[in-house]
Image 1 (cartoon, rainbow, N blue to C red):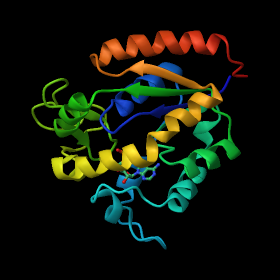
Image 2 (image 1 turned 90 degrees about the vertical axis):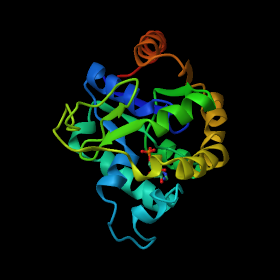
Image 3 (image 1 turned 180 degrees about the vertical axis):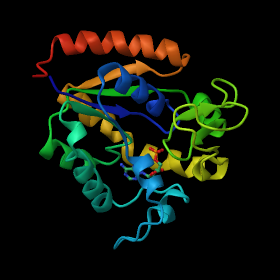
Amino acid sequence: MTLQLIMLGPPGAGKGTQAGKLADHFDIPHISTGQILRNNKDMETPYGTPRSYIEDGNLVPDEMMIEILEKRLQEDDTDDGYILDGFPRTRPQAVSLADITDIDAVIYLRTSEENILKRLTGRRTCEDCGRTYHIEMNPPPDDDQCESCGGAIVQRADDRESVVRDRLEEYQEKTKPLIEFYREKGTLLEIDGNPSIEEVWTQLKDRLDDTLDNVDTT
Ligand code: AMP
């Protein structure tokens, strides 16, 4: 069985948190393009460094992103499938992905703007593995060392309020239209992303189990 999933939704909707749970549950890799870029922030490319886009709240160019993703999907750990978190974010990315692979389900976490802002500004992230915490809802340990890998837990530069607004604009303009793109393909699974982490997870697991019962994932 292989399982190819996409997490879709605005920044701060909880895509990373739920993708991590899905990865543990199905034993498939959680591929966060944001984390790949942060781990290679100063990599020189013909389009400039990832840092120059991320820290201004802009999307990196499609050409750069598609190349990075294609390379990542060729690694051995993707043989049984994967969960994409943060890709695709534009129509050209979605079209390129459709050219190289089939997607079983696209999980769209529909979340209110109020919750998004609260989650993003209170979010703290492990610099090394990308595991996320929240100062109120899921506080980091007192020593600010990640429970998964021991890395330093910090506030991402782009989780500051001024940058968050630019990221949300990019989402509205470039990523939100993908909801319709996948709805038309019949793969969209719309989940209420507003309740607690555990409530969203329960809902997501039930809906996904129902969907996969009707999908051939061999
Ligand atoms: P994320 O961790 O998913 O919130 O991504 C952090 C930042 O990385 C985004 O604000 C973008 O600057 C960049 N990024 C991540 N994934 C993509 C993508 N698929 N296309 C373009 N830029 C991306």
